[in-house]
Length: 93
Image (cartoon, rainbow, N blue to C red; front, side):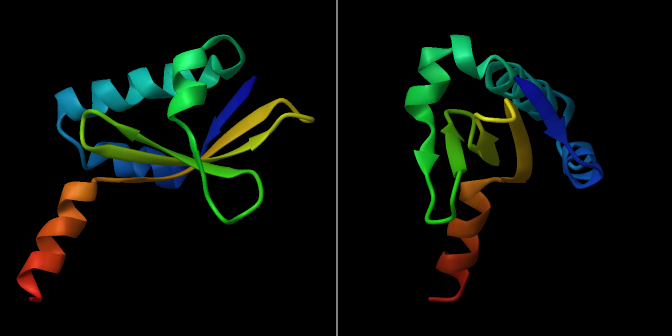
């Protein structure tokens, strides 16, 4: 599979510390090996948008991506840390 990440993903990676960045890059390797990595395929959850998925990693990172089996292409759309959203929700209560 062709694996694509844009400059926005590169910018997001720079906001992470070295350990977090390495873990995300490792998940990118798993995604790039989509066809052979049953574990990552099982982790992927479909979103309402066509061919769009996300993976919640055990490292407090959510990776959003599109999957095009015909073009044999995965495009990473965004990264997020779910714990950051929880902190914002708790502050507004």
